[in-house]
Length: 574
Image (cartoon, rainbow, N blue to C red; front, side):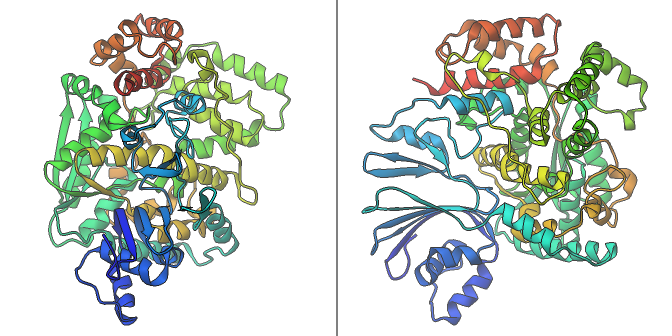
């Protein structure tokens, strides 16, 4: 869209939730608007106030490019938390950009040389860590950042207009000091305000519902503000331990939503797996991409806009690893390394399979999923040198990516822990600035957009983000359980017993799938093809694959990034 005065051209992806208030402000300053869209409000705001001043006023999810004709200046911008993606690369004397790296392949002179460090990141953590891109000469714009490119300037200028670290530190410096009930009331009113903005749509609207704390809270609050039953969507799997459809249907029935669920068959899994490299046009190996794809496809049959519960774990200490890492480091950080290694050896002697079988003695509602993997992680944590290393180990899928790569890679850096915050808050900040935009939001954005579905994330509204950092840690963690304040708000709408279950996230039975419905697909990629041999050490991968298929090891967590990398190379490379 071009501004009314013809000076500013805008390309825009996303939603500006406060565009009505911005429209009023523009009109009060004499700006005459022609239509009712948030795109027009954005382009006219930039024409009147400039890019930087407009960014200070925006509430929403967005990626945009602005070309100012009079100054011949290009500005790229990505929203505060990185919900919407922006990729860019220098090419010749200019710059190319887009929402996905696939667009670069359209340009003459483009080099598809891969970034070895990005490859290592995919194998270790399951995704490419920004600002890197899978292509060596390209970059991913960081959340809360602008890039300015001027034709007569020597190169790009990058500026942070929103710093998550500053939000965390300033929030901790000016904490919310009122009572528990007043904090819950403030969260309630803030969430209601956010949903009022995000439920505005001139197309059918629904929500993902897993039956967990975050998605249930979003749906409960939506239902409270809706004049008709909210449309909710859930998928489930035939494996009982991983099937959350039953939990979601119970919650949906209580809330009175118009609920749709689908139990996935093995044939559907095999068909979907072949699409993954096309959808995720960088190598991406968070196995929950499969249920995300499936639930997006299910919702897209009925609605055009969907709300999700993403962000609650990062902002309100919902991940077990936040508590685990802080607790473990407090316990072992001062212990000599030799004693820690002895402790690790005692845990590692029984196999993960033994620990998984032992967990069957624990009552179902208290039974930790994949106990063997957790015990194995605990043993590996005993070797770490600091809290950042403990965190990285908890997230690691392949410990030594270079063992499986044919090219030279330097691996992935250990995250820097922010000073001035307690350990759990510092780990939340690491996740909110890295894992969230690089993994969770990529997963949802690619899957939803593939099916023409717009995904909104109310828990990542920057108003709620800033409020979350003002909360004392005791409003997030009590009795060794995270998300206390979210739970207390939810209990006002849903009985505690309906949602108090062991946390599972969007867990999937990768080990079983790779031996079952996905075996033929994965076997064809790993054992028959050789398109990835210059990138991946296929001999090492094949040895791991055989051990898994023969039942000698449980290697699904390590195999998934290898399978997805080989699948991506097979699909995208000429």
